[in-house]
Image 1 (cartoon, one colour):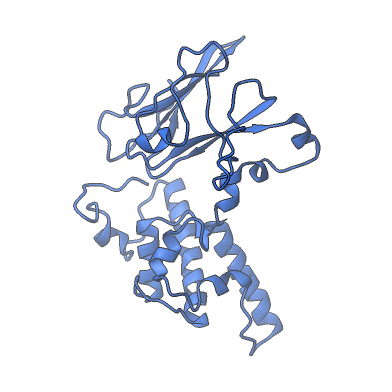
Image 2 (cartoon, rainbow, N blue to C red):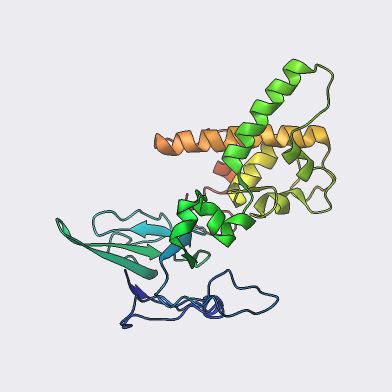
Length: 269
């Protein structure tokens, strides 16, 4: 049950999300992203009578889900231990028979995130459809960078074992070669080659690859090197964060982003 939804973002108002805190029916009304933009078909308005509603959250750069007993910290936000956290845009509540009222809040100080609601029918699950296939926004997102780079490296090992002089590349590498768009812009495009790469990750990958951020028309060799470094940077970063250790000292991160990059004080992870 959505008990409150504060919509103070003009860009989301245009998408049809409205404040429905005191509504008697299930309190979300949003024009589904299933609306055909070209035909402006408005008959997908969510009324609360649907069989199933899917709620999808985009975390953006500073999005987080908190509960009264667990509030993830943000290094760039002071006094972030209060609940609901500052910049909370949505609170979900559920009445639990054993533990009473249970709730969680979605907050996003920098407002790069988003909330979407999608209608679904019971037979969609009965037919064995994957939930991610039922949310239109997910179809537009490129493959996860960590998984894609791991798969790429594994494929290259197999290719090299079977063909010593072969220049064959996994298909994903072709999306990086001979492109007019600058390579950093390609990496940051979440609908392009991979998703999940942000500013500092892109900088680290390109630095280690010896490729200028504005370079265009990458060669096959450069694309291969970039994917190798992508896999290393992402795997190492995940391991360090899980172990609560700092990144390797030789990383560009410490010089480029540790002091906030372009004028800030701290980068959130």
